[in-house]
Length: 174
Ligand code: S3P
Image (tube, rainbow, N blue to C red; front, side, top):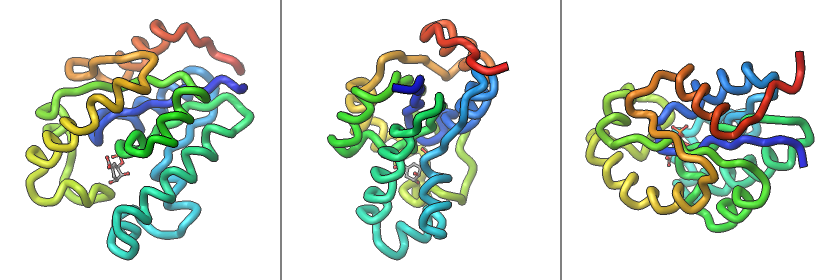
């Protein structure tokens, strides 16, 4: 199995920013599940939620996650916040990757998230929606995580340092 690090966590926890920086530090590929969904369907996340509902989006999300975890090159994968909802995805994560949970307080998430974009579940009350989703998902992130990093007081390079220290992965290409 190729080396694979998957970042999980709530919207706003920094998965994409940290993932990109981490991949650059390791010399690995970077895959972002939302970007993979958009590339393979030709629709934005918001359009998919609008046309087929959340279930249609989740099916695409599961498909690209399996694809990302089957890659035969070392990769850092940023898995969208809801990726842990499906039991099949959690089983894949448990067996196919080292999983890092970027854990944050809902208040941190709310302060980092900008209005608009690819997060239709947040509606108009970001803080309220984030708190509700966080309560449901916290045990699921915990279930799949091999490593937990509390990101509330860290910037992205500090999170990358922490992940590298905790996983002991090293740069694999010059
Ligand atoms: C979602 C998170 C979003 C995106 C969609 C649903 C979620 O991705 O997939 O809006 O259910 O947590 P990020 O976690 O990258 O923001």
